Length: 180
Image 1: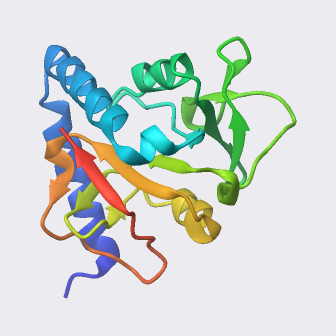
Image 2: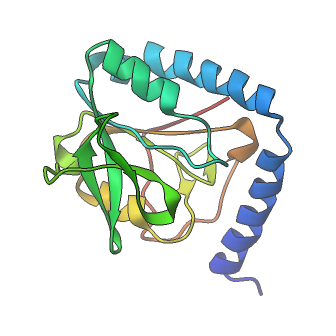
């Protein structure tokens, strides 16, 4: 019998292939569509402090989202990997450095709590219609979201969306999933 861990590994491999099949033009088109959906969302409109993420090459591009949020006066925060947790730091385009997993991370000593955010936009490998997300397997966002009171939105490509994904007790459910 296949374990939940085995099912997750298998799903991660399948999603990786589906996303890799998208052309660069299609990915850019979808990032623009995501941008429009997130900006029109009431949670975004009402939020002042927004935690976003710096996307990896196989994730939907969030740089336009970051830049637009700043342009409309939002305070933008990004995660920083420290050991086995995520710290939340304010985004400043001039104070970024490559950190863990080759992800650009904000520098500086000031950190914030997830409970101080109004909106948290979360990456994932796969999502389902119930708000479940599956990450890369380290549990960084599950730990971060444990004490979060913010509205949470998972974002990605439609190829990452399923009716149901394997979940475990520690997996945090998001308020909403937006895929394009």
